Image 1 (cartoon, rainbow, N blue to C red):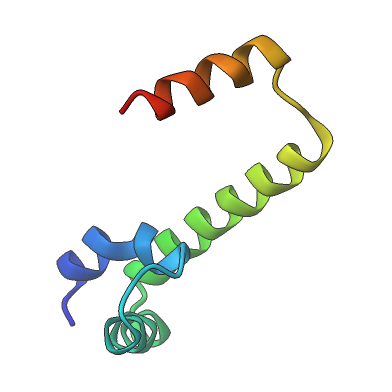
Image 2: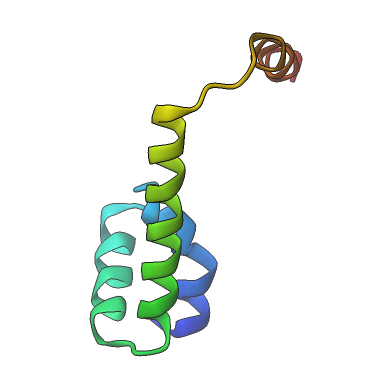
Length: 74
């Protein structure tokens, strides 16, 4: 797998949304690529930060209701 391909599917890899064989290919590429691995680490750290913030912060009820209504209408 090439760097460009990994860059295009990195978020899906982090969200564990890739097919198993694709995930293995991305993981193998990341293990040996000095160019892609830092991007992976940064994005993973960003997602971990969001998860920690989500645990300590809660959106106002009106905002949550508004978002749920928008999602339900699609």
